[in-house]
Image 1 (spheres, rainbow, N blue to C red):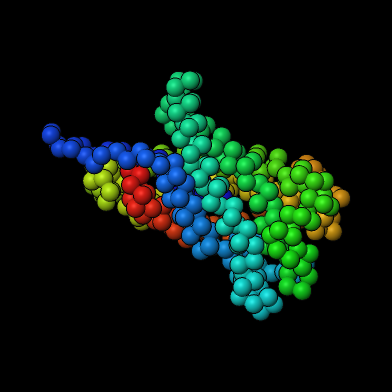
Image 2: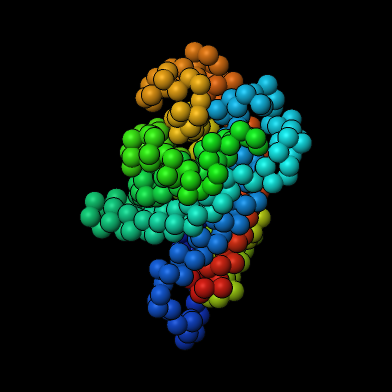
Length: 329
């Protein structure tokens, strides 16, 4: 989710001053949406694969898997390979790859469309329209790809020797047959949407603000010409990393309790306390009552901070390369 938000936050960069008579590269609009789709999908897959072991550990800790419930982040990272082999750290990553490609594309394209709509129809501009468009784009992408996220979490929660699902297709069939048909794939959607609105909005707002301010006040220090269009100024790689890391950390801190609630609701019948966590309110009440704030609603947050830097680094670096490769500047 953080990588996709980072990708969508990368708005068209400001243009560098152009000398009189200088002709910029011809605008390449043919198959623009397809090229945007590929750029966002490739970057998202690279970023998510890089932090897949941390994502697996986060799911195990958030839902208090009984094999690892007494362990911390680093202890779990050591314990999973011993119990399940090193490939155990990537359990559920196949479903994540299937999900992140359309997720990144939908969020990126929806952000641009919503931003234009809000500016032209509502007359809202500045940083506020970025905040609103980001929230709406995040919710749109979540709704469209939620079933894939549900299956990915179910697969990631399984421990070797105790498999309920044999793969992605089997998980889809089992959930559909045993958990209420199509609606079974949308358990936990409400806390997801409530968490995504501030998460995506704050991510877009923070990153966009840092980017625009940085390029406005220190273009030489923080920016460089794009390789596919020298008249366009883009952030340097390490500055992209810094801005994305700050935006992700702030957004995750605000929305994290909703993420914990969503994971538990997504796991559904897999958890023994399933009947006590049927609604968002019941789930939050149960987690808070049994585990408190630090070890319940914010369990695994430190792992999210650890994930933030490499995830954002790979996402922004890959996406900037893909934008230039596909001539999106």
